[in-house]
Image (cartoon, rainbow over all chains, first blue to last red; front, top):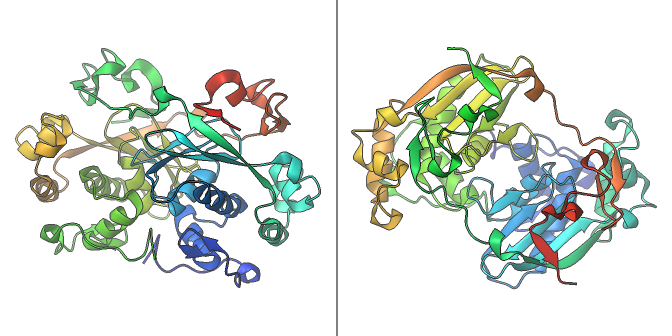
Length: 208
Length: 208
């Protein structure tokens, strides 16, 4: 059927685990990754373990939001394993390039941050090589890397209790809409007298 | 099973259409929305139609990337109906607050932009009220709105041919990693002598 249905497993080697990723077995989670993310990236496997750690660190039954501190891989682990997505506004991505996520209670801002701890992977050659890009990707052995991530389990991550600052707890509202005098399209009035695209921020040109 | 499996339909009224959203029927697409986005938002239905228009405007069989010009709803339509996600880097979100998407061929940057055209919804009361926030959400009738979006079909959107500027076609690479002297975590060396979080951009405080 396409993106979510009809998934095939990428690696027999890691097919037999009964480890759980949210409501999914490892096998189901790997199928979801392939369907959604298009390839089974090691960052998604690590991300799934991180989401699991974070979820267990939150009180049961609360409504929570999420941050990812990188655009690489982790946003998709959060989107697949929690209710938080970019489009529903419950997941926000920070361009810090740190391999970390944070889940926090919507109203109080109290939550847990989980990160891949560089100090804990020094002796894990495949993970260390992947994480610090010590070899070109095509020279790394993905099966070895997946097996090492899986074998390491939760031992390579660290956690922190965090409190999201109050100004970041308020929901960003688009507010009143204006019609841009340049392009004629609707945009949030608080962006200025013309829309941000017409202010020069647009990365493409119209060819019509 | 959770996020992707075991979905229930939100609205009987729009259950019978054979309209297609990518590889899904309307019914399947609405189920996916509910499972992924947590609620069946009108922006996802409109977004599904927009993705369909854009996909048909691309040559068959190409590899393409995507932009969304808002964080609201549209990123999830693109993520559900195309291979492009935030975590695989093929979808980038621009904070313009314009209800528009752009799909473009990966290498040439040539593609199509689709936007909800404010000029075309003046006589469609439910859509106009929703789009311009003319009434509080709880006073709007979601069934009326969904029916109107569905009945309007493709008539309320406009398209543009676009060319993504060359500097935005290059894949952003994280590059070499450093260890931040403040927090001890790995971060992209080109962010500066300490990581962006320690530069003061982090929206939460550690409570450990």
